[in-house]
Length: 260
Image (cartoon, rainbow, N blue to C red):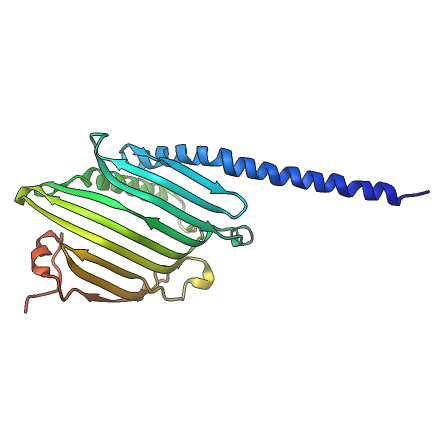
């Protein structure tokens, strides 16, 4: 009795089934998921911030785990004036996500971030309502955590993000009470990685920050362990071309520094 032929016939069926699954994954991830993600990003961010949030486009490549968010805008309380916006956010996912059971991102680049800050009173800014809302949410979460039995706590979700870059960002600050404007342009931030995976907790992260504050260059470099208990950190701040005294009034708390 010939049993080879039926076994051979199973291979085309298995390959066809695999091809259908791959195609279905492409349709769901490439066509359906971006539409859902676009709606959820705007909805969840809007609920958290108490502002109107819009997104122009979301694209996902389900085979490479790459994603792009374009044209996100957070509006002022008037629901018309842009408060924060960026051109695009590119995320390159890693296959390690599947076997580490945690989000692993190989590269994250945010391009063209623009923010417009306004001080419209002695202690009031156009971001004050957002900060108050986030503070209330944090206090509510802390209150819920306090109700849990002692010794019971939630472990923070594990993640790893490498090659983080903020490119060509700018912040405009309109200080209306004193009729003065400040600009921070050419902002570039680079962070090699941020991870709370156990094997990364003892590793130093060496971020860098460069910008022009009203035309004067500012550079910050350093090392830190953001998720280690010691929070070991040291930074070098180069502001030789910047008259820091002009900006001390904006610091909300006394700092251990004096003019020389």
